[in-house]
Every structure is written in structure tokens, then in C-alpha cells.
Amino acid sequence: MAKWIGPHVSASGGVYNAPINARELDATAVGMFTKNQMQWKAKPYTGEIIERFGEEMQTGGYRAEQVLPHATYLINLGSPDDTVREKSIAAITDELARCEQLGLIYLNFHPGSSKGEIEHDECLDRIADGMKQALAETSTAQLILENTAGAGSTKGRTVEELAAIMERLPDSSRVGICIDTCHAFAAGYEVHTPEGWDALMGDIDRIIGLGYLRGLHINDSKHPLGSNKDRHACIGRGFIGTEGFVHILTDSRTDDMPLILETPEPEIWGDEVTLLTAIAGGSSVEEAIASVGGRAGRAE
Ligand SMILES: [Zn+2]
Ligand SMILES: [Zn+2]
Image (cartoon, rainbow, N blue to C red; front, side, top):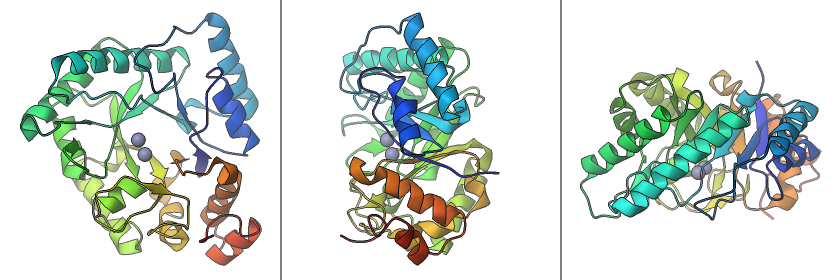
């Protein structure tokens, strides 16, 4: 059993740069985009790119289970606009196929938003139907639903909402969930306390099944509990606090899954990886902060 920790690194210049960038930070997990996240479409990978990606994965010692690709932010499977929705289905199908080409097994995405224009249930129907179409056109990679902060009319704020989407699928063999700590906290889950974290894990176990938990996004939150605001902070510089991650990182339920940092300062990602790895290994918060010379884990 191990803790796999790493940031969502840049893949610009070629997807193979993601494992290269992760390795430079001594990361044991990799978060990445499979293409430019600001565009709907991208050129297909060449055989050369796919081969190079495999080589860099091997050099870094990364296996597919340690990598959590993130889908383009433009995608909204629940969109009330049929044009946007069709584009979203095409884009997520393409990204899922890209993951398969790279030998990866997960694709994390945000469920979607009704934009306040359609009923809640109709939006969930659209999301599940879009997932169904993408899964039907691919063969192995899994769609991972990420919980959201619950801003506006975004779906996936609660475990129940993620479950309601999953229940609409005829088969759950290629779906899973990812919990973003910042989003959960902003949505009102007290992940910063051992009791609150246990309650969330208990909800997941009871409502979905812990076997469907494929990864976490480890982010501190710039806004307080229940704010519904999706603003990530560096570890220890937000309302969760470094202490608030100790029970998460020492919980055996988070073993052997990618724990991805999406924190806002790439300059300290290496220090954040070292800090969190130390805490996961049993160091106290003080020792862990000292181990990175105070460059991460506390207010500036
Ligand atoms: Zn996300
Ligand atoms: Zn996230």
C-alpha cells in the first residue's frame, strides 16, 4: 500500500512532458490534460508521441493507476444548449479515446451545469446520457466524476448527486468518482476535521461504494466552509490548513490512488509534494513544514 502524490503538471509541447515534469518534482502521481484544455479539438496523436509517452511513463516509474487525466473545462454534458452538448459529447469521447491510446485508464471531468435553464433531473439525465455515449464509443478507460463546489447550477455538489448520475447508467463498470477537497469543503463537507472526513467517506461507502473512489484532488480552499466557491489555495494557505490534511493523508482508504495537487503556485509544487509525502509517512505537520524549509504548508 502506498500514497501516490503529485501535481497536475503541464503537458504543453507534447503529452509526454507530463510524466517528465512530474518526475522532476519527485511526484508519485500525475495529473494532466490529454490536449490543450482551452480548445474543443486537437490533432490526433502520432505513433511517435504515443511511444514517447510510454517511454517517459516507464522512466518515471509511473503506472496507469497513478495518472489522473483531467478533461477540458469547456465540456458540459448537462448543457441545456444542444450544440454545446453535442460538442461536449464529441470532446469527452475524443479525450477518453486519447487516454486509451496512451494506455491510461481514467478521465476525470466535471459533471456539468444546467445554467439554470433546465430542471435538475433533466440535467442529470443529459449528463448520464452523454457519458453513456462516450463509453459506448470507447472500450476500456473509465469516466471519473469529480465533485464540485456547487457554485451556480453546477451538478455534483454532493455524494448523493454523483450517485444520482451513476444510477442513471446501465452499467457502472467504467465509472468512478474523484473527490476534490477544496470543492467538498466549499460545498459544506467538513473535510478539515477527522470526524467530517470520516462522515464523507462513510457517505461515499454507503451511497456509492468506496470501491468507486478512484482518486482525490488535494487542494486547500481560499474561501470558508460552505462558501460554494471554487478557489483553490496552496496547502496550508487556505481554510482547510495543513493540519486539515493529516487525517486524509494517513487514511488507508486513500492508499493506491492518485492524490493530485491543483494548487495555484507551480514554483512550490515540489515542496508541496515533499510536505504531503512526509505527512503521509507519519511526520508531524511541524516536521513536514521544517523538511521543506517552511516554503510550503503554512501562511506566507
Ligand atoms: Zn476539476
Ligand atoms: Zn479538482
